Image 1 (cartoon, rainbow, N blue to C red):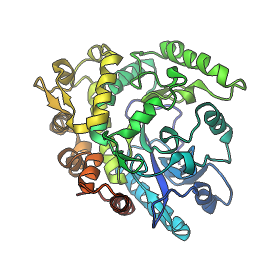
Image 2 (tube, rainbow, N blue to C red):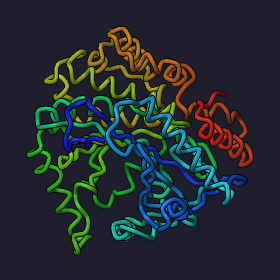
Image 3 (cartoon, rainbow, N blue to C red):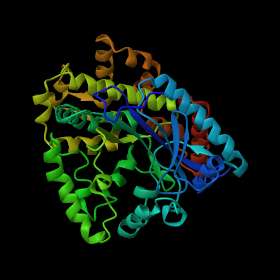
Image 4 (cartoon, helix red, strand yellow):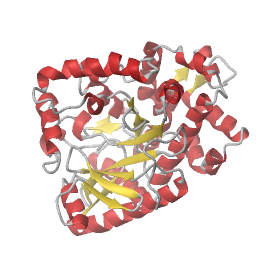
Length: 415
């Protein structure tokens, strides 16, 4: 097999990462046994198990496992099938411990102050430092699961185009991806509660997250000087041994990795099954591609958008998801929307239709899954509808057990 080149160009391949919780089959309480899961396959307490095109990896806490594409991929149908097969395999292994995988971006009733167990094995020195600085028992550390999308760029010119486009799409993501409406056994009033904690879990060192929406910086040199040097300086008093790398620490909603030529989007709540995640990822990629190729507006027009406006819009979509009303004509026109006002659902529906009309076979192929999200609501909205007026622990457990079944069978959650 040919080795993947160390750097690839825009839209030539993608890295996808899916995070899932390990829970008890009966009670749905978290099961901190990811180390035993990986050991079952490798024979040792290791951080990774490479299983063909999908790799299993540990995360900060012992009840979460990450499934990721081993290398950049462009065949999403094959990758989706591989994710689904690996989920079946993991559930088979976990059955002997009366455990299974659970989707969504937040456990609905985990008590992180009591139940958190940090990964204790390979490479845990970084986790130890984070725990010492921030206390990783809170929801923003030990109870949040996401889908990460890694987009490649080859050089500064490609980075500039990609970063400009990604910044515009980030605040719209909760209107597609929100899946965390329940925390501590009750509805939070937010549809993307994970982002509330993502924004605040490192408030002790504000430069780590910034405004979540990255600053309008479009070159490697300026990014290193404006952002990474600031982070390096700010974490130094907390990390005298200099274990933490500013590149790892950066927690904006999209993070450039200049060493390997990629931008990692971290704002997407994970969905109920790989088919839903891959459909959403496809729509996001094709939207970014349309911006980069200036099908909606030129790159200069994309670069001018201020972080403040985009961050405020993200705050709104984190609460209301598809119900967010966007009444900024100029921003809507960035995506070719003809009116002065649109809901999040209306804007994404417009983008979907326009991409299909312009010949996007990828989006057309995922149309059925995308229609569920746009017509039936984000996963958060479907969870809220399924709960109805009964927010009791037994009913929350019943709804989330249905979500576990959806994950096991790779099918979408319908109310």
